[in-house]
Image (cartoon, rainbow, N blue to C red; front, side, top):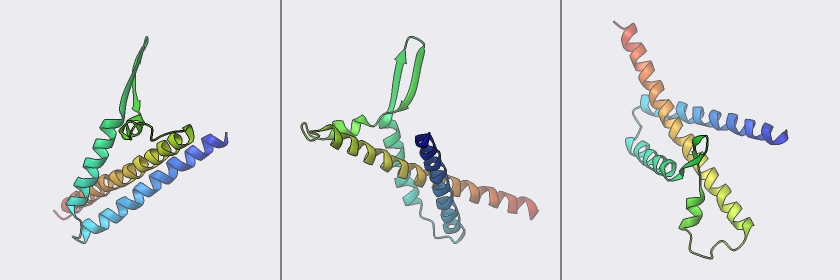
Length: 127
């Protein structure tokens, strides 16, 4: 039960961090200090990590899709991971890095969408 509670709090914290980043991005856009370069870079990195991690598992009842981070361990030289504990640590680091990318990417997307919605609202009310 405590594992489920930890996961739930982690998901809520991640959503909160994404919205905090969105408010920050909204302010940068509003103040005309937003750089598209940062959005493009984070989008390319996030998309690359997502595409490389996509994994399809098929059984007799059909296929399901999920994220698989084993490709990161495959990039390391043969014999680099000598024990299971090191492999697990690298997996957790990869997973947390991907979580950070998701928070940053979705923060940018939500911030951009917020700015567009507010701009459309202002345009409609000023007519």
